[in-house]
Amino acid sequence: MAAGGENRKMVGKLAVVAAGMFVFGYALIPIYKHICELTGINILALSEKQVPGGSTAAANSQVDLARTITVEFDANARGPWQFKPAVSSLKVHPGELATVVYEFQNVQDRRMSAQAIPSYAPRQAAAHFNKLECFCFNQYTLEPGEKKEWPVAFVVDPKLSKDVTTITLSYTFFEVGSSTPAAPAAVSSAGPEPAPGERS
Image 1 (tube, helix red, strand yellow):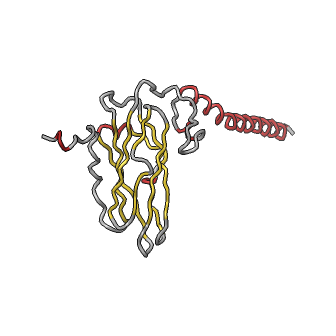
Image 2 (cartoon, rainbow, N blue to C red; image 1 turned 45 degrees about the horizontal axis):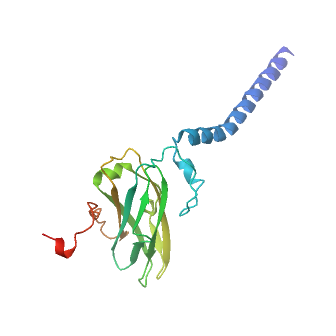
Image 3 (cartoon, helix red, strand yellow; image 1 turned 90 degrees about the vertical axis):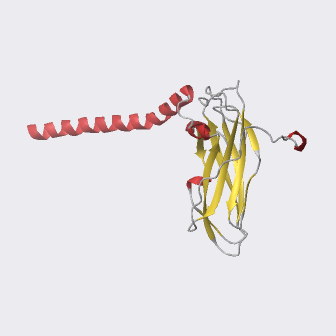
């Protein structure tokens, strides 16, 4: 009898521990999200509250409203297909979540699989350009004539040097199975080209 009573006590203790662990695990998710929103530590929490392309981003205490950076978008197609950004540039504040859409069409009469390689100018911007969503993470198969639109959601790290006011994000889209091209040398972001009469 004594052994049976001890067993019942042990089962009861284990049941209480299991219930406590379940309650703690269940409560951990909202607690974690709340802490991230207050501190701005986890920028991924912002993407849940913004529709790509929209302007209703949640307030983020890490956004540097005193700075504006121009992000230019470049597209290079290594093959007979069409590939371009929906807009040529965006102005963003460091720490602000932004989205741009790239458009692609397979104009061939055969199925193809392709992937993109990104590069950045100036080179130092690469470590501070954080992509939360990007088609460059995957390979895609498109049927003849098929069109696709892919978003790139990104945040420029506020720690980026204040000397950098323009970043160029360049993609090269190549067919999988062909020779993989080197990452493109992105368009110079030093400033606009001089007018013909101003060239030396």
